[in-house]
Image 1 (cartoon, rainbow, N blue to C red):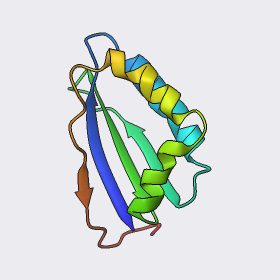
Image 2 (image 1 turned 45 degrees about the vertical axis):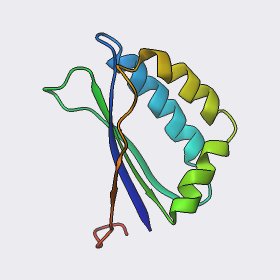
Image 3 (image 1 turned 30 degrees about the vertical axis):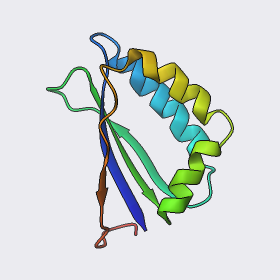
Length: 100
């Protein structure tokens, strides 16, 4: 399995818009081969940050998800409201847990 956890920083005042785009992406991605979890979250103290946690059957399934119809359009929609380039997400080894 493949786990990717990342933080996206929105320009001031655009975090809700970014979260909405990511939630829309989660609806598209939910049908992708190998998608187990695509969760979007925010931290109360970080007004401009949105977190994404993804679990896939494989890194290949994750990479192929970029080809899901509509995903690249949502990426294009999100890029102008990001505060800088997105940082590379953390690739974590899955050790186990509930639901896995």
